[in-house]
Length: 278
Image (cartoon, rainbow, N blue to C red; front, side):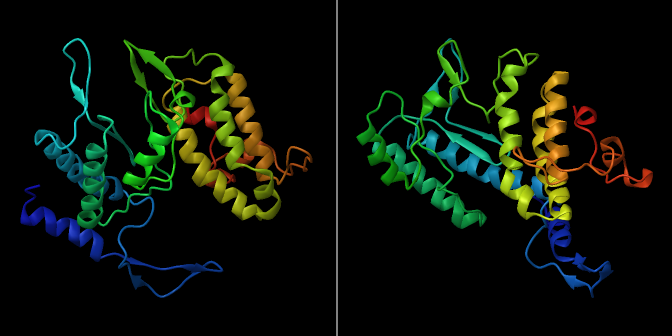
């Protein structure tokens, strides 16, 4: 990608010069060098991932230019869409034939070898429009994908005959209605399942609320303004989970929630409110 020597040395320095230590009962251990890449949440991670995905984009575009795979031509003199990237997700579209599927499989395998990133086919899905179940299974074996998706259950809306898919967000719906927030509420309930509330200690529940739910709310609440009823429901789910409660059994809340979500310097746990994130 024509990065200069200085740029490559900077990136290598960021990856090879860091030291870390582990807190054991509040006391840090001896520092040790980090030799397995960046940690989760490292600010450098998104940039490195963008560089790696750019390589996949170049490989896919090269295959299209050589007619190894074909995208979908949009109507009204629109562009041809062959692949879309969003965060760590990728969508490939094209003609339904074994040749295209085999070439796509080859591209992904080459991407794995050159980037060191492994495509998780257990989480990948293969969709076929106007295809039979047997055709889907045949293509599934060619690609090595272990999931045949149901496109109808994933369709959110259609515009000019083009079906658009997103990560569970009802794009185009009136998000001022509580009913359209059910998928998001379901995701929160899934992450805060009853067995987790029963088995995790208080510190584990607190960590889960901060890390997992923090990312969920950041993604959804940065797109739409949530109704107050939805905000109250999500806060109630977080509050109940933190104190170990379940759908069947309620636990005592020993500290007022406004104090729990306050910053640590103000005596809280630094969780923050969903309203502030929204």
